Length: 68
Image (tube, rainbow, N blue to C red; front, side, top):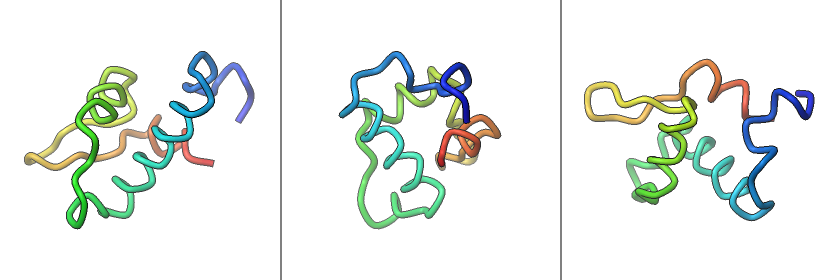
């Protein structure tokens, strides 16, 4: 992933790390064991990296690409 295609490039380091971990948690469906931070979920949805299907968070193609 190049810097231009990194959706987290304009965020502070800690926020970018937190959001990447949230993407990993969604991909692994760990949110069934531990709830996702609502602010992280909203941020990822607004960035087009996550969408809600059948009341469950799901990564979009861009969300999948954002995980190194």
